Image (cartoon, rainbow, N blue to C red; front, top):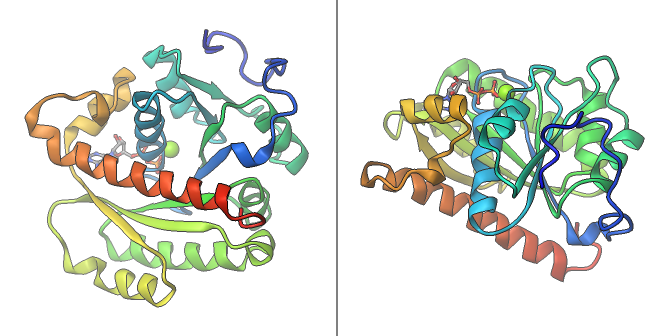
Length: 248
Ligand SMILES: Nc1ncnc2c1ncn2[C@@H]1O[C@H](COP(=O)(O)OP(=O)(O)O)[C@@H](O)[C@H]1O
Ligand SMILES: [Mg+2]
């Protein structure tokens, strides 16, 4: 049973999960300094992707707006649970680790816009993979470039580089606007995973606990393929992390 109905911050760690080795767990951070670029959309669709793969997922919702938590409640899917964060409590490493101790093997972290460097460093510390959604506007692209630099300069990243990937969101066409970002990323060898279509289906899904992965309609086949690509890339990262000691 999911613990959606309980206060997510107060749920006691289940005995089954205590003592689980960290290397079994995949922690995916979805982040960008910009608001509205698709962090929650990415986090919720990813959770649905893993649930469809038969895996249990914990969405760790660090955003005080709690949109991801709300989506989990609406979804009422036994494979998807949420863990929140006390409204007035700063993000600390100890508390993050405590939350991880309660989480499933797949953890997707939805983060708020504008996390300070200190908070970002803590969250990076517990994450193995960072996914960065970006919108096709010059302001968003510039902000994302700076954000990627901030991630790479964070002490925890410097100590141990994370797997990073950027996802272009709400693109109507393969816009030239992304070219500068693409060049910057390729100079850093950061993959540019997919371009997600701009479609109202994402807005509707978010408000009803659904996801693009639940749409069997042929109209959304291209979109489902995009999620498949993101999911497969993540599975490869998970495999690499597991098979290379000291890598994650
Ligand atoms: N690919 C997309 N197509 C259409 N609408 C989208 C898409 N991605 C996100 N949205 C919508 O844009 C708004 C902001 O997205 P959201 O995921 O909440 O961003 P963030 O969490 O970064 O603030 C939401 O209303 C969401 O439904
Ligand atoms: Mg959000």
